[in-house]
Length: 268
Image 1 (tube, rainbow, N blue to C red):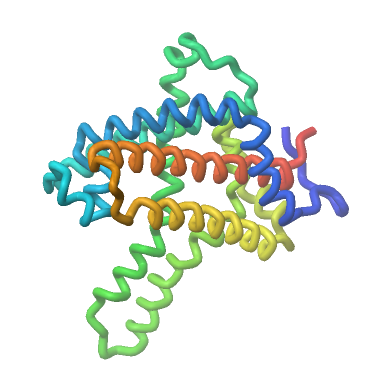
Image 2 (cartoon, helix red, strand yellow):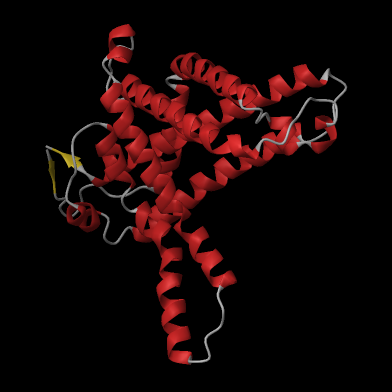
């Protein structure tokens, strides 16, 4: 059960929001290496099966020495399968580290509904965060209307899409609640408990995504250069490391959401 915070309770800390997710990985480093390497291998296998390997997509210079083919029609099923694998990984990480559940064959066999639920949650999270991209395309591709009132109304309506991720940040705690299988909580409760902390939440989220961006850019900068290693071996290594770093970024976001839940919602 959760209750509304009172004055002096659940003070939001930007410092905790950034440090605790990192501690969550260091304290569970063995779990991350075991699950991360396993799922990175699965994602790497998928990329080779669908011919969507890292060097073929992001390193044209090294791709000249690889049997890369342009099979764009395979990208959609590849992306869906990749998201399914990520949903399973998210579920296992959350249940293993926060739910303290035993991950065994019985857990995998009976976890179908949970995996499906979290796949839907992952899709919802991604779609909501892509709304600004859709708004940007609508603004770029629009045909200007000579009636300024209509033009202003269009800008206002489409421009609201850019606000969605910032509003969503205040509800990250809700995703942690749903991942824990606790059911939907009232949006009003979370909104009330985050009132007055909107800027801190946005700032801490910005710091988190800045860290993730640095990780992503570092990996890309490393593997977008030429190498003297055999192209096939280098391609496999680049794909595996990229997938492992991707899982690390996912874990950081999941840990961040859990910290939001712990700070924003007070358990009775």
